[in-house]
Image 1 (tube, rainbow, N blue to C red):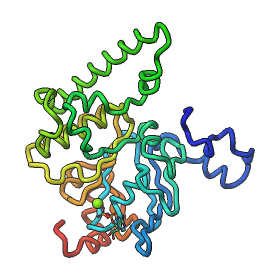
Image 2: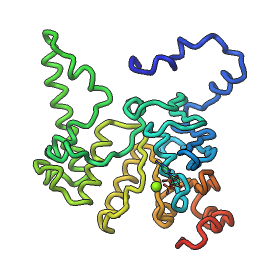
Image 3: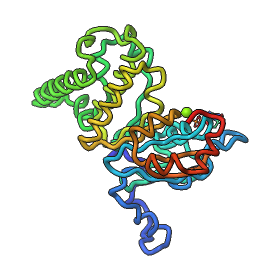
Length: 285
Ligand code: ADP
Ligand code: MG
């Protein structure tokens, strides 16, 4: 891709094919969308993430849980480029994306939701969805002043509009398409955040507590959407504090505690895991 950080472009690397580190890098299986390897993040004297390693399988709805302060959000932010890790690596589809900017990571198909920013509140719901960054279309859409290109731009815009309406229907936001985003209820905002993410045509979606503050009816709906999208081939990593939601919906489940991965497995094995029970001691499981 033309906008990959040039320092990491493979053709600029010296030919060290037979060195052990080069070999190790090449062993990242491309079938694994996401691999986090020895991730460390410190804030001053606080170690928020302390050598976390885990993998996410293609097409899975993987859950990441842990008590408050376990380092889940910091891990999430390191994966999505919001924080630069102090140490360790993040690989996406075999590529080392450690330290990449959020938009560079999103362009590769690994996306997260963002809260609707102030300037987007003053646009309609439809505009919000149409203006979500387009992975394939973006560049050519704005660059086209050449004769004959206008037709292609119009065609692309028609496609984006069609896709936007489909996405709004999927999230039951079509009836508020012409309202300002700032007028939406809290739950509808969450739906819009998800709709914007899907407009980018991602491969993998990361969600950090997407159900916090959402009423039970909407929670049910959002989970249904996530399962349906998973069935369509999307990969999800769902970060949640609430054990029950993860236990009922995710497989496998990764448990973090004090910045480290404590356990990985299906709901049953996690429920019976002594270390997990200890970590959650004093909290409702
Ligand atoms: P979780 O999402 O699992 O509740 P976090 O990743 O938010 O945990 O936090 C892990 C630890 O890192 C906590 O002790 C928290 O106070 C600390 N922390 C998180 N973000 C920052 C920050 N920006 N500056 C300083 N400390 C932080
Ligand atoms: Mg958190």
